[in-house]
Amino acid sequence: MEEIKFSQIDQFIISFDNALKTIFGPLKPTDRPSPAMNIEEGVLSEAEKNISGKLMRVNHAGEIAAQALYRGQALTAYLEEVKEVMDHSAQEENDHLVWCRYRVQELGTHTSYLDIFWYSGSFMIGALAGIAGDKWSLGFVTETEYQVVKHLEEHLKKLPVHDMRTRAIVEQMKEDEFEHAITAIESGGVELPAFIKKIMQITSKIMTQTAYWV
Image (cartoon, rainbow, N blue to C red; front, side, top):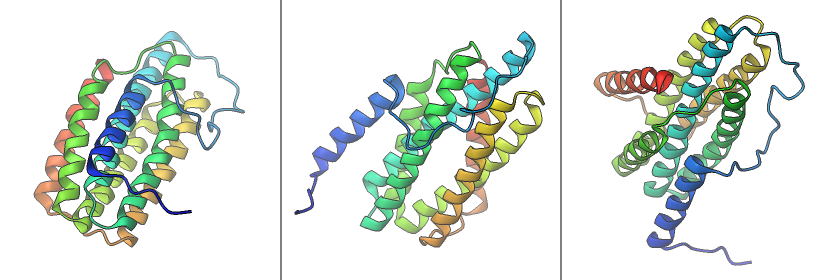
């Protein structure tokens, strides 16, 4: 069967459709079951639920941003194999998105009210990274994922010890993010300049601190 070739306009329409589904749902079925599926809910105080809920809201916002970054980079990537790397990573990030959203709901809180902002801003950054060139785009993925891994490690320290459902999700996310970083390196990613890494760290800190409360 001949492979379907999408025009640039088709790709923009598909990207817009992905954005609507990511932000507003309904939730897509995941390729993998949630790591929390077979873990019984622990007895959490309201204060503990509040902490876990806010941390998972931050993680959900991060997954909204990750979807946008990968979709933006895939749209402007030059090589087909790089597009495939971005699309595959976006699929796995979709699992994270669904897991986080359900967990946020289970903990009795809400996702960030600024999801549209996180998506649109991240999509533009991803598209610009793709335009800069595939090696830089892949390097951007690597650095982003390394920063996410550190961020998830900090969350594991802050989560209530007996909130095993949330911990299982965060642990699996951390493992997946590290694999995405390695895949990007092996696909030709280069190390970013120090000042770019610093800007990324500052931007990430603003997003996480805002999403924690809003």
